[in-house]
Length: 150
Image 1 (cartoon, rainbow, N blue to C red):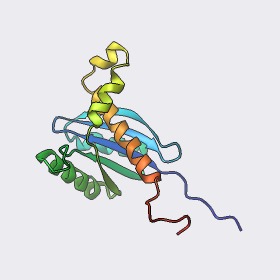
Image 2: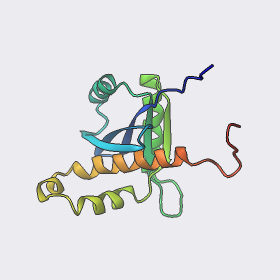
Image 3: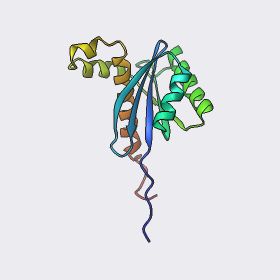
């Protein structure tokens, strides 16, 4: 008898900011993500349209922290946004520490064509893709205490 493997999940990732919200999409199959769009603030109508279009199985929200790991006002706002997503759309939502994602996204964009670098939302979208790729990488890494098929 052949066991059916679960199909890879489609995941939307969010780079939370007080002014803008970067959004990316990815698949567990490849572990890769691509930038989708940047929304002005928490535009629930636009978020609903994205969820309808992409039909994600899971949402991932990057939660910013200070370098020492402590929480800031933005940390609390991002965690609140994650809870609101779960409540509004009845989808599983996971969070991931996103320290330095904007810095890494800026480095990635530094090699992009000038017109793309000039787009103020490009950094947010790129950061969302990095957050999602980081989550895929973290999700694929077994914990040190796990054993195969346990």
